[in-house]
Length: 123
Image (cartoon, rainbow, N blue to C red; front, side, top):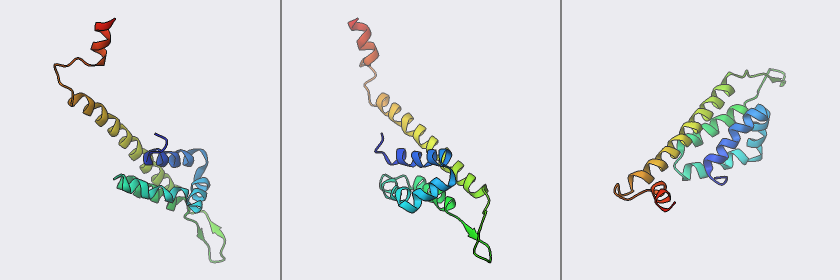
């Protein structure tokens, strides 16, 4: 699971909580979070990749005043980007778990006992 693209994207969402905006921005500058986009897209998780990109872009959004000083850009955009990524990743993981559970039960012959039934007959 640790090598999965979704797991890595989840780590970025967790980093946003534990380390804050600055930690996500630093991760983007180091290339860590942006390097996650290719595996996500390759695995077919386009929306996840878009949301990770939006989170890192918003984390690194820093505006300057006319004198070149950094100005607080507000937290709303970052909060919305984080929330969208967190909710999407949770829903995607839940859907993958449900799909794997359903696949295992749908492809089994209904007359064939499952593992639970086999354990009971042996015991």
